[in-house]
Structures are given as structure tokens and as C-alpha cells.
Length: 82
Image 1 (cartoon, rainbow, N blue to C red):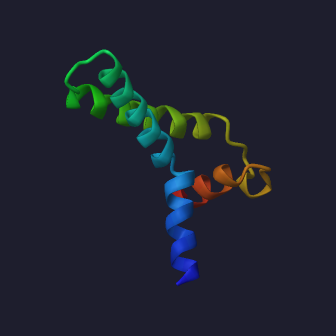
Image 2 (tube, helix red, strand yellow):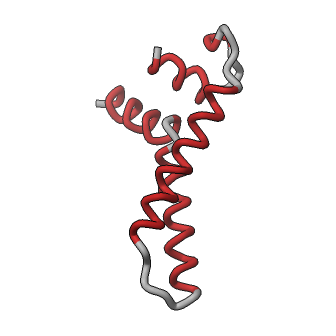
Image 3 (spheres, rainbow, N blue to C red):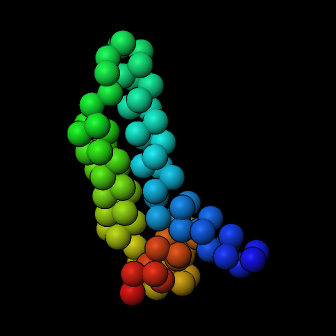
């Protein structure tokens, strides 16, 4: 059970889904502060673009030997994609 929870936690944290959800939450706060109805198209674009930017950043800064990286997120991400 602990292994499964650790895998779920690693996925949420290292796949940058957590950061994308935080960006959407910040967008919702902004809609609330300007007293506007949330636009789900904008929130969806915010989620997808944040996820893409964070993951492209990992791919662009990756080394030829990810297993030697000092960043756990980079080791996890590159190990799962190839």
C-alpha cells in the first residue's frame, strides 16, 4: 500500500500536474477578485499550457545521463518517458 501511495504522490508531484492545478487555482482566485464568472476555456488553457511549459523545460534541460541528475523530478520524468 505504501508503494502505491508513493507512486501516486510521485506522479502528481513530478509530472507537474500539481503545479498546473495550482495555476488553475490562481486563475480562479483572479476571476473571484475581479468579480467575474470563471471562463473554463481560459482555465483549461492555463492548465494545459502550464503542464506543457514545465514538462518541455525538463526535456530541454535534461542531460544525456538523467540517472546522474541531482533533481529527483528530472530522474523520475525521464525514466518514465523512455
